[in-house]
Length: 487
Image 1 (cartoon, one colour):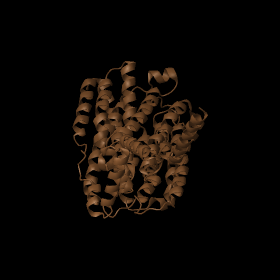
Image 2: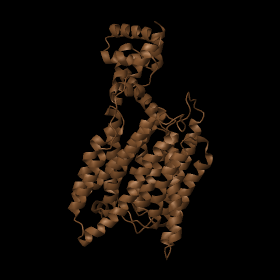
Image 3: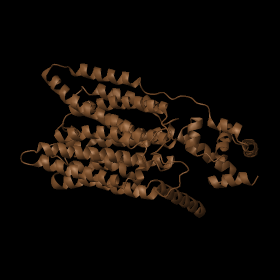
């Protein structure tokens, strides 16, 4: 009994050590950028007159939203062939601009007579800085292993989740200081992340730089960005037309739809990563489109329950799309198909453009609905039709021949590896799929590579590898390779 407890404790300690090595706080800094967006424009922390989940299109918000969309598109193009790890001035300037813009915007808005010029200038500063931070963080994360990225990016969303519990209760000077501290924390973590990865040895150029851009890949990104823009247009329209404060928020004291929606979005993103065959936009919108349609269909009902479900679904969609978009673009960059700056700049620029146009349109449509010029049913039907037609642009995955098969015909060692795999398979009772995966592992391929080649989910590949190790009585990749060397 004691040995069993010791073994279990050892395994738990090993698992915690592995998680600590993968999930390091410094890599969660992108979550502070997402949290800043939420706390600035969807809570009353920075602007006391803003309550709940509604966004007011005042000069500071309008300047920030317009600037961030422009900055993402332009910076993604200009920085596409630069090594962002060496741009130390940007590591400092980006968070400083956001923090300075946040404080200036609060000062301009809280003055006895609002200073419109300062509001616009502060919004432009925060928009430019936040756009730079998004691209810089994508570059920093792209230097990690795929397995680590798939843990870090969803985990970063927990920052917004925690902020939804705290920031609705903060106002005045404490609120301004708290919101302004978020981009500064992100900037500090960004510098720490670049510092940790700068000494890492790369066999290829950094993901910020590629010899050429895959035209087909760029087409996929543009089409997906158009769909993201429409999806966020719909979400932005709902946000602009929503009540200033959700009834549940007034009763429970925190942003309930955002909290539940963000938590569910994180869970769905993790399930997507673990069980989907391939992380791409086709897989994402296959299950996300019905949810968005449901959110739009429930919106016309003004009862508390349908309104709550609609808001929660919008939060689920927002969290899921942000996480999966970052993972997909970074994955393309690591496969040398697209500079990470360009991919993130285009996709996130489209997201912000959708948010901007959606909120402006939502404000105008609210006036039409209030005057009776437009019925809510007609508006909802139009948004559903727009989203449904936009989904037709979602790029479908294309089948391609396995590169392992090409390598097998050209690599002299392939025949020996195949013979050893077949021998081990017969001796240890491996299944056909396990034998196939053993061949990839023997050639030094990683699990993400195997997933891509065999079109299997992360969970499926991990399960096969676990069974392989058990049947062959090895505990690590190195022990497996040693087993081949001994024969």
